[in-house]
Image (cartoon, rainbow, N blue to C red; front, side):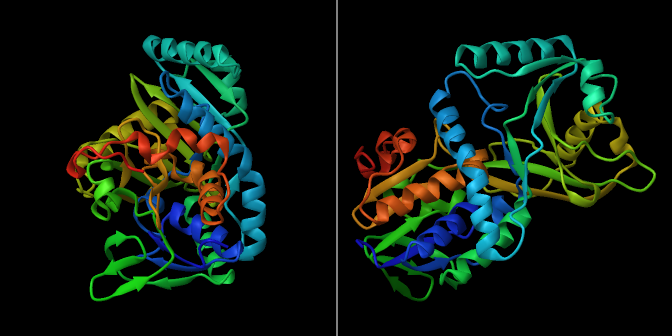
Length: 376
């Protein structure tokens, strides 16, 4: 084994998945995070939807996401067994819906684009969609069903990942990392020696290593958590998402009548305050799709910071001997957790990672602060 002691910096979905799988593979693992299972992972909607979120020009991201989605059922089964609790996986699929003519054109373009890639979806009119999900409103005129896409209850999954990592022998240090270098993770008042450090600190990753400076940026997202009251229609059984007058909205069901509505997207640095305008837009767009939410209880309004990159692909691979990057997953942290953990464990053990992760090699990014040196 090439790495006996591994320090994982970051306790979100990526860091916890890496920690669990690395400890399961026999490595001694320490997780460093001041508040594990928080941050963007705590806020997330939990969509596992590479097909529904496909976008022209992001074919490599689609392939990576599809490869990870394929791994999710086995990943969830192992997680539930190791944690002794549910994984939070939901298999019901996704509906992508549109309201006005421009939205319907966008759906047609998406369906045509996916067909050219050999990925088929089923087109439906509004009546057919309401037979599938009776709570959809009359404004919904067309849509696509994507039965292969999944979802996961993010907070259930995070609790399971932390329990599974602990059961596998991972230890947790509740401290903030200041810097990562080969063989050492510098904390606020001490340092941890290690064979390999894995940077999985989300939007804060760029502060930890010079080769990540400027390569990761925070992308703010606000979400709402609702609960159906006894007088209201129940939430849909599937994830429902799509453009509403050109603005993307998603509604992800939870057990016991819960519903997650998201998400705004702003480039405003490390601001995590929820804005009135963000809440207004989310409610207005969600009501176009699901009018019954007007009778729901508003349980929570919260914002998180997605770790964005220039091309929306994560940074996954060696930065230098002894330091691995596993960050920059943007809106796909939960989706890409299985393939990311598999790739990191392969690197730790001196094996070749899955073919699909080659596109995420950090070497494609240039760090101006490091004199133009590639991240290799």
